[in-house]
Image 1 (cartoon, rainbow, N blue to C red):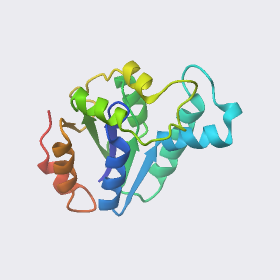
Image 2 (image 1 turned 180 degrees about the vertical axis):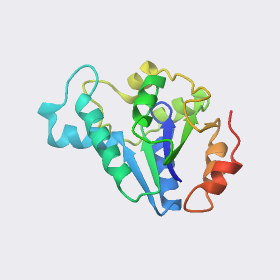
Image 3 (image 1 turned 30 degrees about the horizontal axis):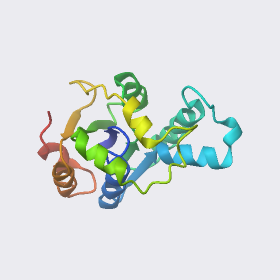
Length: 186
């Protein structure tokens, strides 16, 4: 069975780093990262990107990439973005047939001090940010709707950087089978 994995968490939670590290351990995996899409659109098609409200072109691009990934032979699809709302997560998971895909939500529920430290020491250039916002402004606006049972086949809650390392250490085969059975959920 194929796997779709969604990251959940505010800016600077470590979602992109996690997705890259996971993809390195899973040879038949594919990462769809909305920060990369936002950066691409702002660099190459700035006139198409709305200045206010949802970035619909980015969401449409994500949908198209999901469609392509579903029809590919990739075993694991990693959706890397904030995924802060239940409705947004449901919309992202809807295209994945439950008869073909099992789903995992990886929730970065780290202490606020961790986020604030990362924001303070960030080396990211912010090219994916629209308007005059900063990462700190984005963090202050983001509110995560906690995942609930039934949203996915598995919910993994990471409460520390050690939890992230433990999760990644459990990735022992290219299909995530051992990890799927071994990791406890909250």
